[in-house]
Amino acid sequence: MPVGLDTHAYRGRLPHLSKPGRTYYVTFCTLHRKVLPERARDVVLQVCVSHHDQSCWIDCLTVMPDHAHLIVMPFEETIETVLGRMKGGSSYFVNRLLHRAGTLWQRESFDRMVRSEENLAKKREYVLNNPVRAGLVKRWEDYPWNWTPFLWSGGL
Image (tube, rainbow, N blue to C red):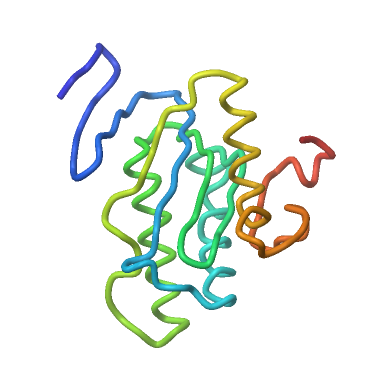
């Protein structure tokens, strides 16, 4: 359903808005919140990061034991397409790694447009500090499944 000239709304179990050129805060969870072993988290991180600077800009990404958070801006594709590729690719490679078949991720993702620089900074802090809040590490920089291009440019 069109909301504006360039904004599209759709709904599964969750409401979604899609608009070209926007940045999104996204969370997607494993089916039944199944915990991914460390080597599977490595694969999810690698697959998602492989899309950075190709089909989207990833501001930051955290792969938790049973879900992932990211802030992402698709280049020319829709957010649905970019997430579909990330979830589909990671599902394929994790299933191969673990010698299993079937669905890895819940069908829908939670996604929200980031509306301001202030909101972006808060979301970035939330994503990167998620492992700290979960008690997995004391500093977000120590979590091996956190990724941001700013780690290598001296930013943040």
